[in-house]
Amino acid sequence: MTQDELKQAVGQAAVDRLLPHLDDQSIIGVGTGSTANCFIDALAKHKLAFDGAVASSEATAERLKSHGIAVYELNSVGHLDFYVDGADESNEHLELIKGGGAALTREKIVAAVAKTFICIADESKLVPVLGAFPLPVEVIPMARSHVAREIVKLGGDPVYREGCVTDNGNVILDIYNLSIVNPQQLESDLNAIVGVVCNGLFAARPADVLLLGTKDGVKTLE
Ligand code: 5RP
Image (cartoon, rainbow, N blue to C red):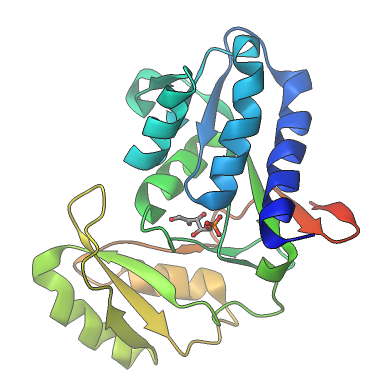
């Protein structure tokens, strides 16, 4: 199977997992990226089975609307039973690196609200130790140099993601050369730097379920 086929398989597996729990009141939190897009496309075939969605990015909102799925503001929604999103890396504890698509802040907010976070990924994303994928950090633009210097003190090599402006009007620093043995501690340390909006470690609130696309089928870790 190609990587795209694995992404389609996990997108469909997430829909299959959700369907028994949906009714005409259900609102689903939806992530961002190519794997999340596979989920959206599979979910659209069942759009009469639920009410609508909360999107973690403008791009996802557009894709949902293009399928005729209602998109709600998070502030207008009382609770979310499910959030479904991809990841750049996951360890066996379902702690994640996210933000390759620069949507990390809204993704983390929607994930925080959801009762169950279902992560969908192809098998290349499961790693023993997080950090081979550069860790994205969303930063207030005027704080970029300050935050970069503080990241160096923490042992990372920050690189400004040229030409990238987030949906929140901020910039991204990608941290290279980290071997993240304590993801919760690093998530907290990065959040403590003045000027950091959010970082791409999802460790304080990891995924609850990982649907992993492998050549032998979709495996479930939870
Ligand atoms: C976007 C994300 C994505 O979930 C992550 O980058 C994975 O993307 P893809 O499914 O395209 O590999 O965090 O900010």
